[in-house]
Length: 382
Image (cartoon, rainbow, N blue to C red; front, top):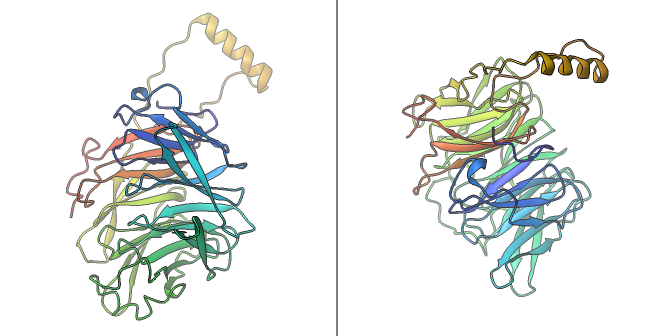
């Protein structure tokens, strides 16, 4: 079991060549480990190479820009920082982003081109930030279209739109187009679906089918599909195209999901309170039919070592003294994760078409690697 922190891991991000991982051990710090090219904790250096400590509250989100190598972090302290690496000093240099929010920042994401980023917040707003070269600071332009806390945000592949989810039970597609930063061409023909696609802050589509908090959102590699999660143990898929978006909703029998990611245009991985990544697939590249494909963690029963008479007696005494019970309760799950999975990080191929492997982190402090082919999943590519 690859436990990184006893306090849990709230968020993580990898650099472009996967030689480093940045994670938050459920604190105000960001720990950056050298991985030596390995995806498992046993392959990493034992201690963090860098510890970033500018935040004063728990870090809620980390994103590593593969285009610029800049690290983006946000926290419950209402601040966001863009970290750039100084090779001469061998040090990460923070640049404070003035978000102008009065509540916690909940998630941050770089745009695909890396020239701007979005920050979800409990202040009912989403600042879209870009760097002003003339003044040498980050400027935030705020989207004010939400009625409650925004829990999640994701970018479309065209760098123009964001999709958000929050505690007002809604998932929204919103224009984050900025003329100075984004191309005007429309290769996806979104102009037919969203006539106001180039009007910043315009709500292009709104979905109220979750009827519960929307924990996370994701955008497919092609840009024509979305996925979002409802707290009522639901997952929803949106197909863009035609005259209007079409929504497919599925309910599963387990606990609610907290994180979702596309691993191809026809497959999605979701996980959360069930402590096990689940795979959903679409029958057709442009269809609206989705189905549950299976669990990635096969939940094999763990073989426990037999205790000696002395260790069994010591354990019984400890339980009686600390818990007031004669024997320890069997609470360990058969899953790799022993608590909620907070994030999924897919490892994309060079064309960003398929991610057959991914990493998860959780409140149990475990960061672990998953290979879908070894777990028995096939035909998940386009």
